[in-house]
Image 1 (cartoon, rainbow, N blue to C red):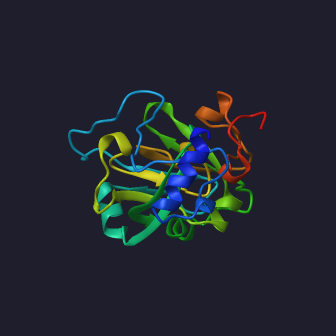
Image 2: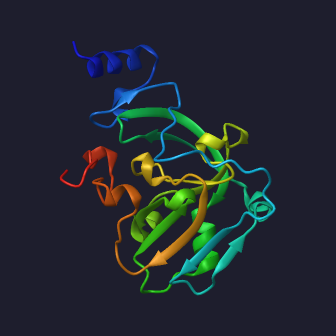
Length: 204
């Protein structure tokens, strides 16, 4: 019996349904740390902000304090990494992306949202996906502020897609008219990234 089959059997022993695990994934209770470059570390958040811009009726700039005051939304969700690990029942709190949509009022030409992080990182998600599934600008994980390696002070969390789409160290949310590739998409990853369809790489 291979590793993935054993892992699914262990899931059943723990009381989880193996059906929660997308194809090609294995369950872990750890939270592995992966990123393209270094970890952003902030001495203070005096100069930090998050900008919402592009094809919107109202451009927005949030300080960390602004987001903290709005951070009343939370969900518990499974997350799935393209490197094949999945973690169940992760608890996040922050600002619902639907609130941002209501405030920014994207124009009819907007088709895609590009999420910009530190170090030039970016990830594209279609606006239709974002409207059809829950997304969160997360400030808290398991009741505590995010750890630096998991994206402090804010990361986007969008569990419908592989976790590389959930941009750490979020600094910008840009509404654009075409489906442009982000950092990993330019480096061979799938433009969409649905874990249930195993859309890991551009040829999948």
